Image 1 (tube, rainbow, N blue to C red):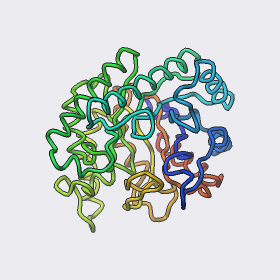
Image 2: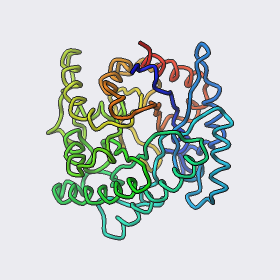
Image 3: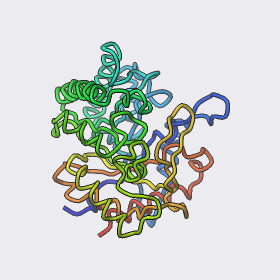
Image 4: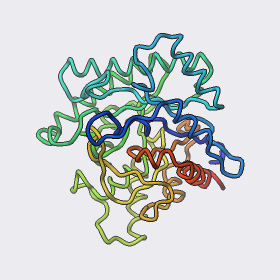
Length: 339
């Protein structure tokens, strides 16, 4: 199957992640406006096919009625978009709490997964959603608590993820665990691989790879012992390390984010520092987006992947409001799937 068969989706959560109403924070961008910005992107007649969607306020009320959720599906479909992967609100302060926490915290995490499965069912039955996964992470910000007892921390996350995967399986859904250096137990390629293998349910729980975040895996930012590269590396060294990382994680990868990274970490609002997303055409970007994406997308059809998504979390509102941003992103994604 050709890469060209992959649909191109834009993420809605860059309008929310790192935004807020606190001092120095930029306000969130509404779902309606994020859809408008996405719909306006056009590269030689090619447009985005769909969106991936964050299940939390102000875009979605987690307690919304069935009718309200159907109205949201109508809104998205009216722009010509399918709904793809959904992001479950698993973090403290949303529906969920740490997957590494107490029984009460674990239950809140599982409640968030159940809520996401409910929304997925409504979108599926509506017809607006035709595929995709439900994305989760450990919801344990930072690695210090995990490092105090790594074995115990990972075992607890494994237990939570197994229970979450069983909930997803009961609803006919798959979960994808996001690889990102800010999530305890998932903060290096080796630790997240240990976690995935510990759960051992590849048909239900896989990996979500993001180009910007996994670049920091190579550098061992929060786990120097697992670094595959050092500063000053050559291109040859880079791709040898990249192949090693992707060969380990690609068999688990069921959701994929195209992104750019300049090798720095970045945080905004309440979001802990993680791999910095950069505009697709950022002159400081260190990734050959097309080449790196294809390492992850090899044999994509064997893992039932039907779309890819752009992620530009913690872009400034001025960047998000610029039409050139979205056209550059769309062009980069077209290049990824072009033969």
